[in-house]
Length: 339
Ligand SMILES: CC(C)(COP(=O)(O)OP(=O)(O)OC[C@H]1O[C@@H](n2cnc3c(N)ncnc32)[C@H](O)[C@@H]1OP(=O)(O)O)[C@@H](O)C(=O)NCCC(=O)NCCS
Image 1 (tube, rainbow, N blue to C red):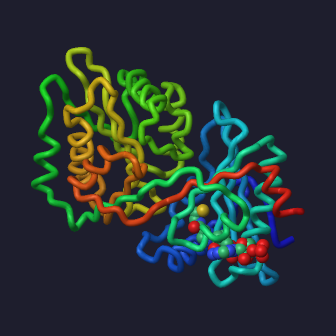
Image 2: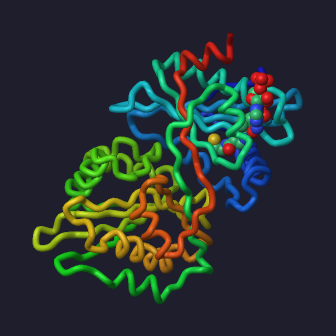
């Protein structure tokens, strides 16, 4: 059977090698300046999920046994139960032959069988995936702007100055690999607080539901299991020693030249003191020592988040491409594909 569904733990070394090669062919065709994938810890990356989440993988091989497409479906548990996210790629040489649609059909069937009603996907605005998901009736829910900071273009004097400029009554702490237990509760409450105020917080699958201390602990452990090293800078208010701001970033073993900075938030009561800027600058100075192989850092903002955009541009981040969050109802999708 050309199309096979399997649990991540069933992936063989050959499957992993082929999976990586589809990703890299797709990257070369659609996003040539993006870093390439490595097989290093790719198995861990695919296996690791939060305890309540479940992941299924789909491999589509042609008659010669060559992998022509693949998909990964994460079905969320906990508060996000009933929703799922898919990543799907067809090898460029096999496009336009129904491979993507066939994979999506299996993905939708699997999601429906597990009780998922909503399916989402992240799509890069400049790639053929936009036409594909439009064609299949997905709706564009959110637009995020991706900004890139190229390591060779960083003005380190400016960054060091920004990292050292801190309002009285605050200090910064840097932590690699996680958040110390003593900070976990206030760290989680900063996140929870900001999420309810519609802040420009970008939620990535491995961080969903991490705004509670126990979920946060699970998230950090999951990142580590997936081969993603986390780097965190927190702003702490004196004299109580509680977290009032945070910025989080990961560097993954599968693409180690790229750092991904996805959450930067400051508690509303502690805004306008420059904490966002100092934290983002400080994390760069730490990365310079901890991750000397980096080529760039990517970060995300909503179109409307002017304050975050200002900080990013001061630090040297440049907007390069938009990402769309597409969503659809699973039953409707099945009707559209399957008739
Ligand atoms: C999007 C993608 C999966 C499409 O795969 P594919 O195998 O070429 O798609 P299919 O042949 O199954 O096409 C299904 C339908 O979508 C349409 N379609 C596909 N690509 C399209 C495009 N760029 N513009 C308009 N329509 C498109 C097809 O015409 C077909 O329509 P039909 O049902 O009326 O015949 C493929 O281009 C890809 O892998 N892109 C990269 C995806 C990516 O960015 N992945 C990273 C993370 S998710």
